[in-house]
Length: 334
Image (cartoon, rainbow, N blue to C red; front, side, top):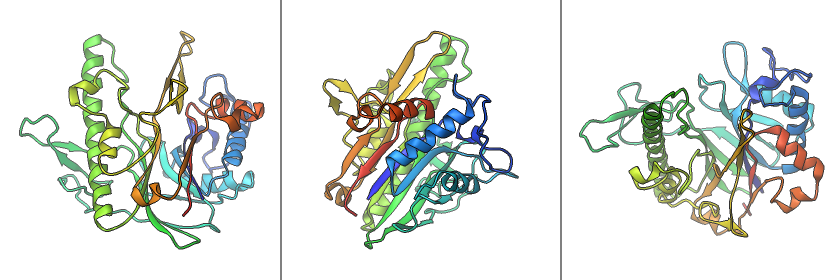
């Protein structure tokens, strides 16, 4: 079976208030890309990936009138995707939900959040992901209260062959110092954001360890907004969020891997003003030991590096238009 994760930039902008696609020549939110261009590009990418289940990071919005599930169902139906069923967990206030599209003939999937409901008082023992986590990150004897702005999506999944596993879709806190105007403010916000991101990773680490203690296998996937050696602030805390999750007994081959001397890349961000770009490894599919031993094969759908993409100029162009992230997939015998 094939599992995939895909961060779709400005997916919410492609739907109206009734969750119908807006396939017109208006701007999508991606620089220089219209809504119809992005919509058609996404359809080509989802079709090419042909996954049994796709974790969608920054999925369409859920609100008073809008529904993430309804929007994704409409998208899948419009383009005849076999991942015809949508599911999400806790909604958030960012217009960037976490949801899945999956093939109901291949998988049985249900939202199954774990942990105690804590409210604002919090808990130091991996509370439910829409709750509050208490942790002292800087050893000052004062606990920090941490919340997810985008609560991870926890799923119980069973394949048609009967294999059961847990799936956790994540979008960790961005480290970017948005809104900072001075150098000192950039430093303060960058450190504060990294502290929160590390706390979220520790929260996830605890949850994964609980599942392993129960003998449950886990696939944790999504946009971690981090990786070993990604920025200079990592030295202040000793390790990255990805390393914290790897220490929970999870595995992904990409954090330390190189391709002909090049670092792995899942995202490319363009600066419209300067014309420069930044490339980074941010998206992962991490698995526990039993799944790791079932002959897994990872693939980053990079338009210029992935052999399957280089052979199709149409797919290359679609990947560049669809999002500032590229999909990551995992083929494994489940």
